[in-house]
Image (cartoon, rainbow, N blue to C red; front, side):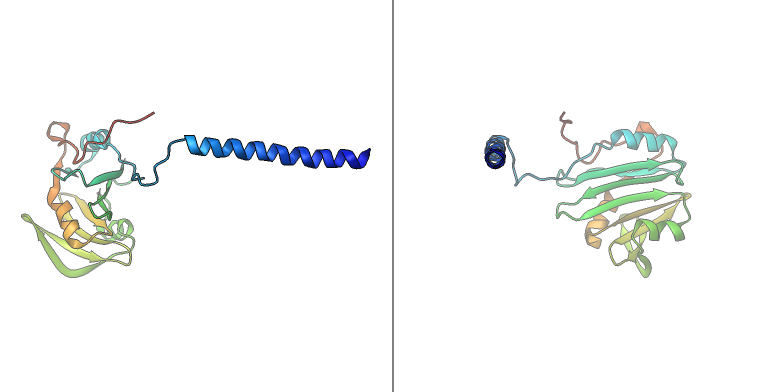
Length: 190
C-alpha cells in the first residue's frame, strides 16, 4: 500500500503542475502586452521647476520650444545639496542629455555630474553665450558659470545636440516667468 501511495503523490504533483502551466499559458495569451511600445517613462517636471525657481538663489534654466521627440525622463531639485537642479531628457536620437545647475564650486561639481569629464581648450558659441567644452569617457558637456551658479548641459549626445539643448534653455528665478515644459507628458495612468 505504501508504494502505491508514493505513485499517487507523484502523479498528483504532475497533474497539478499541468493545470498550473495551462492556466499560466491562458493568462499570457489574454493579458495584453506590446513589445514594440516605447518603455521610456516620461515625467512632468512643472512642479519641480516651479519649486526650484522659487527656492534657488540663481535663475533656474529649463528648455522651451523643443519638439515632442524630446522626452523628459528625470527631474530633481535638492536645496540641501548646493541648490542642485537636474532635468534629464532623451533626445530624438535616443541619447541622454541632462541640464544640471548648482551653486557648488565648479571644479568639484562639473566632474561629478559629467561622470569625470575634463575641460578642453575649446569653447562653443550658443546664441549670445560662450560655453566651455568638456570631454569625458562617458559624457561630454557644455559648461557655463554665471551669476553665482554653474550650468552644465551634459550627456551621451553629440555636441550639436548638447548645443541645441543649451539654446533652448530659458532661465528664470520666479514662477511668473516659468515657461511651459518642452513636452507635455501624457496624463498619469493608474
